Length: 335
Image 1 (cartoon, rainbow, N blue to C red):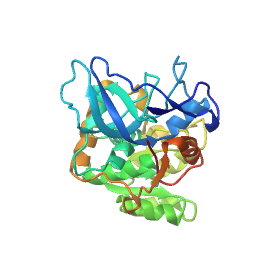
Image 2 (cartoon, rainbow, N blue to C red):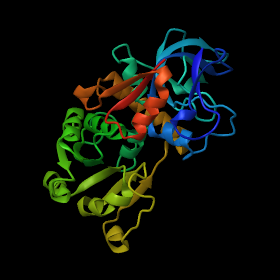
Image 3 (cartoon, rainbow, N blue to C red):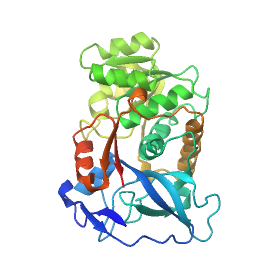
Image 4 (cartoon, one colour):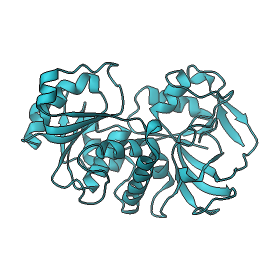
């Protein structure tokens, strides 16, 4: 099979297209013929040296993807050859991920995809949707379902990103009033397409005033991509007892808190990283995301706020470069 590999960390030029044997599924594993692989910032950071790749001599990147089950190992229940599935954490804890024609994964990381859902959507779930789910369940509710966030105001900082897009769609499905911040009119259109009720351009307007206009009493939950630079704004618009759930360090490595307004408002800061989520939280996220997909509440494409940017497998390095450059949309690799 064709696969992308790297044997040392560095720029995208370390990625090579090679031929490797088709892997055999072990006990409790499924082998998936990958149709679409999703590329995330975490893949780029791991390859470039910003995160550990484990003690592996060779790595095929790619945590997310979608395809068709091709074989199953002993002890696998609930998956059959021919099932369409979406994959998450495919490369976590093992050397080979979804930037290849085939991948083997623990069966629990291959989730059946409804016939009504595209494989492109399946490849765009994984890291973004599970991260968004955990952020949205860090506050008043532990699970997402229709109506679970009714009456709450959710602020999504960075509403045009992949996590932001998933957070908007999931929060909207759960009944929240959704406010999104963006940095341009182009991104504002994408946030609206995702379903945001209110969109605030923080670069060209008074962001705090815009958010407060939509949520006069403050927001209940903030999904935060850049806590180092947004904390002052977050505190200006947070309701007493609000949760600020942050999943990235965009814009700076240090979050400095003014103590009095933080404790006066009773704010809760919840950091989250997909790779360290306890198993029960992963299971809850997968179940709720799957329910949203089945309901047609999670979608991809420019008309739903997440343009698709496609690359063939041989151009995976260019796909990584696109993510690194801040491409607007979801970058996909097609083996």
